[in-house]
Length: 234
Figure 1 (cartoon, rainbow, N blue to C red):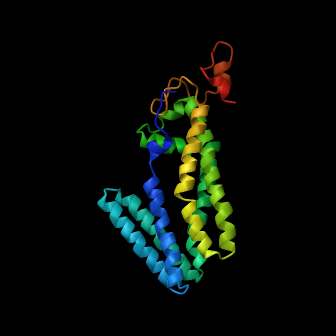
Figure 2 (figure 1 turned 180 degrees about the vertical axis):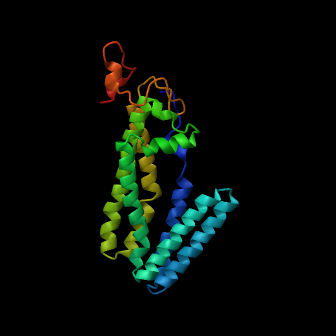
Figure 3 (figure 1 turned 90 degrees about the horizontal axis):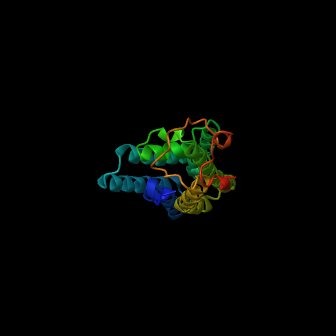
């Protein structure tokens, strides 16, 4: 496969992931500094989110993406203020991770893996990759790593939320954002590379000569030939 760049290089996302950790960490810091006042923590988180949003807009980021992030912090702060429980600042994150895990899993089952949709959109391919059976299968396998990412977060966040461990939630949010995303990108890229035949031209060059419903068994049937490197797909 002649594709040198990794998923991290194609998708980027490091800056966004790092930015996402700032408001929660600031919320915990403000909450502690204010004598465990949710109002102080929420105010500090909103100020931090506004600063981050302003920086990103000045650097040319899309306003829609910036506003979505800002809205998320506003909703998280309102939930905590409404319930009077500081740990509920992280409730939106828990719900979104549960929804994301379900959505990614369903996308794999119905053969529209979200990893393929995301990469295809970034590379300007739209859905042409679906006509490449090798890429369709590889994106499906790689997408399971993303499902696992959300499950790992839930396995950590939910017990801490139930235990009212606000500080631990802030630490977990920081640790399980960019470091976990980086690991997810690396592992899913490894899975994709292992899933593609050795002679595949790579993510930027889908082979669109076969229908998306073709399988390895179809190509190995009498009268056909398996692609080079298919013996390691498993």
